[in-house]
Length: 168
Image (cartoon, rainbow, N blue to C red; front, top):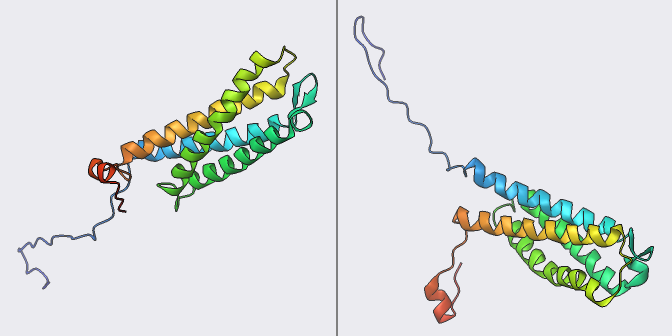
């Protein structure tokens, strides 16, 4: 534009390039809390394998196949937590994996909780750490599911559910 003459004023409208809408801070915080809970649950789960589970024996020595399942759940839970914390995968892949890991870990949680009905006492710190780790992982999955539902990034189409078709 030409410079304004003496005594004349000109108004120039500033146009900024449209910026992509940033997600609300509370929504982003929910994904981060879910990710950190998953990491904490996975670390606790791995640590609980080394502690005395029952009668001063750790879970690896006592029930090795159950311990292997716990170790795999811890590894996948750690990956899901990291995926939920990473910016590139924080909106879909990380929370989606976290939902799957949390759902899978409920089987071990039920087995842990019914363990006391089968065997009589003697449970050590490892047992309680494993129960706590699974509860933390389940809470992370629930929080990730709620954050996904509130974000609007994932929707269930009732028509697709009825017809069995899927579209991305």
